[in-house]
Length: 318
Ligand code: SER
Image 1 (spheres, protein in one colour):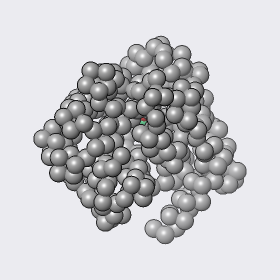
Image 2 (cartoon, protein in one colour):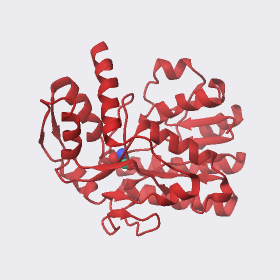
Image 3 (tube, protein in one colour):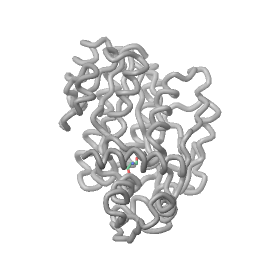
Image 4 (tube, helix red, strand yellow):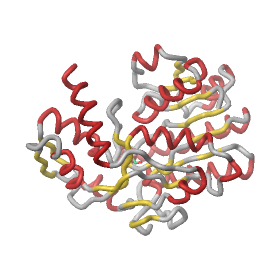
């Protein structure tokens, strides 16, 4: 990775991933690509920024050519709940956008990282200890685009030798940029509400177990996989990765260790609940561990402590 383009760099993962890549590979060597959300001052002032709408192949092509990009981390995507509300948009961004990126990568011989998701599984998948290779019949538009994306990336690797790699991210918890319209967003919102109001109304029901991960581990997963020795990779698109699995009751109890008077009630969103019920309770990520040394650092208690400390300071400053 020498000259890197991050699409979706203004989003939840992209914003922090871009800053970490700039730290490691040099500010000028990491181009932040964003579409319509206003980038933060930090992102704008620390390196190159380009307006990149992935659904326009000419724009992707021009930016890759101009900056002599050799690696694209393609983070631009529509998340699950928004995708259910607007399936046509989700198909356009998640499929046509990915196709454009892969075509440009083929032409310019770029490596490509594409995040897949726990959303690539569905109700007929074994939901406990979900294997790396198993049934993938999702019943959401988000899931359809994620499975198709995994297949497309594998196809570009086999057919055109494009160095495609990806992980199936679980819900990502972070304290900088908010997620936009996912099913796992509650696990971020709960921290903001616990700190600000000491109470939270959860839109997923008690007993809804999902895989989760703290942002530093999500960033590490992307970079470690892209740096991995290709000779060791038996899989490519996409590796199960997880760091923890909990339901709303468990995370609330963990928060209560630091904010004892925190209370939570429920107002279940049927669309999000339906999506969450079709996703794994916990994934088996042994293939990632074996093939490229994946090992998360943050457990639920360590993450919770860090989230509350960092966010408490931030929310006081505001
Ligand atoms: N966090 C994502 C979502 O909820 C899962 O990939 O849509």
